[in-house]
Length: 149
Image (cartoon, rainbow, N blue to C red):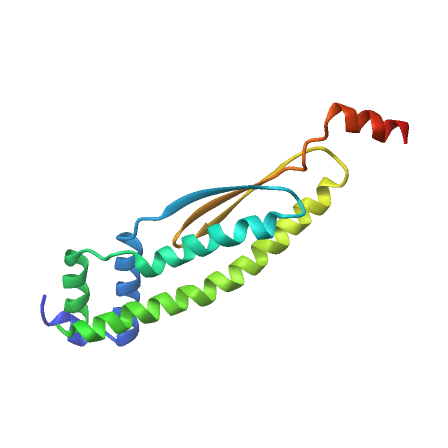
């Protein structure tokens, strides 16, 4: 078994490191409640927290041992592989978030003047964020005033 890592191509070792990292990572779960006008501002700090969780999560010693094995016992090489996996994840995450923001904007546009809410989940490698968007509640007095013109 100790002869296997030197025979594996770097790309295969890299994929194994990514799988180990993903398997041994504990995701965060967060929730955001916002209005249609303020959802991006409400989501920003939660999104930052979840994304930064990927940088601060500790990797178990058992996983580090396996990664060092994959890098021919060179811990520095294993750490470079982990860092590269994190960088790849960051690029994918950016593209994914742009698409998710467009989806949320489309859902909000679909709400129109309806007093309804929208819930959407953003599933990232670091965790899941439930975004609940609801128009501000209108008081009975405001409803009467709106009705009167």
